[in-house]
Image (cartoon, rainbow, N blue to C red; front, side, top):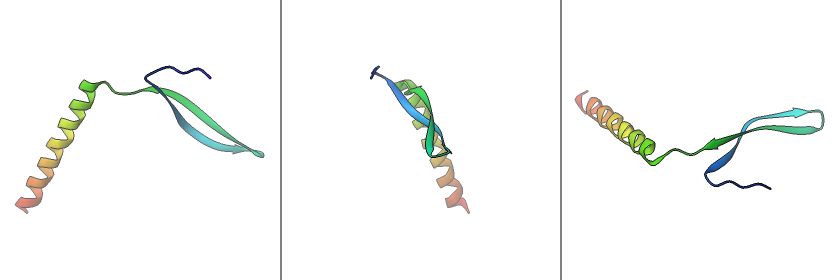
Length: 57
């Protein structure tokens, strides 16, 4: 088994072929910290907009 830090094994497809179950796998790398911060800020601003719209109606 080969291990490499920072990579994840992700199942993409799962299907049956005869008596076997086959899994198509992909390798992915996690987000960087600055990407996570951008996504968190975007989600927070969307929540604020939703709350403001909900309170106005």
